[in-house]
Length: 362
Figure 1 (cartoon, helix red, strand yellow):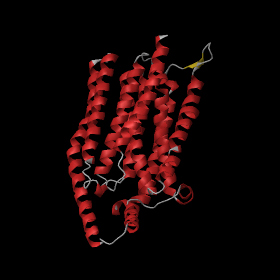
Figure 2: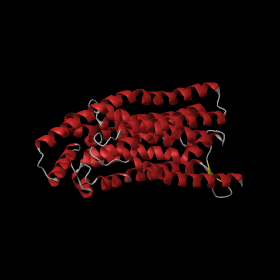
Figure 3: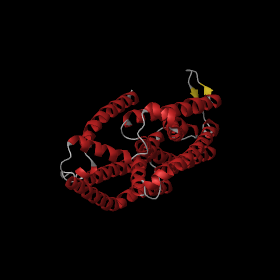
Figure 4: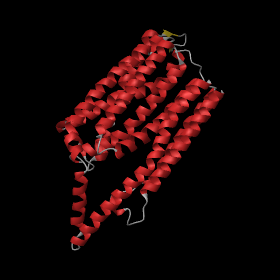
């Protein structure tokens, strides 16, 4: 019927958009040394700001259209609007500071590059490549191969565990958001609102975590920002557990937005941490290995924990499917997820202790 056709259209839209966005964003990839961009007239800060404005505007449009279609009451509307507008204006307010800091960095690195060229005019291309490689090495703790990450680096396992806990919990909520809404008696149409606002929070989380962790990296190391994201995810699971206890749709809405924001932060911090801790020489292989954490975490939390408890408390229908209504369906799952986030927080604390000297010098 119409519902099936709508789902097919959505799948087709997502498939085409992923390819289109991938090709479109490839034009913004810049592999030149940072200090050389100014010489070629490349204004990366301008492109960066445009991206922020576009993403923020599209997110706000999605928020307001979703809320209007959902017929949410005025009190919930005010609460949700306040939560979603705060990170948007924080991102926009930070752009002038980002611009000034970027210009200072370009000026400093450009001056450094000029002085090196003046003092080493006879250096050939081989020596120049070695110099750039040395500079790249200084931007990471060490350059490790994947096998070395597995056999030599405890930091890899600490980062892996942190992402396992955080992204696994986030994927559990994403995969089961429809059943979570149904378990507390929410309307079937309301799941679309939850998915939309969760995705908006996801985009905000990526922008805010990326910007703040870069701007204040001299004061707060990136493992600490990852710990903040895990703390936020832990709080979202407690709020979602409360929504199951009280059967409150507005509480579920707040918990879902906070969860989406926290989940997005992991995807902004994870790639950067991988490059800083294990180097850029084998970055592609190392990051692919690190991406096993979300895959394993999503399976363990979604299937082994949430799926098992949902089937345990649910009832089997005539068609063989399981339906669960009531607080028991996901309340225990959310509490277990919060405990997993606490494990991830302790893992981040250990990672921060092992890397604090390097980040202090960096």
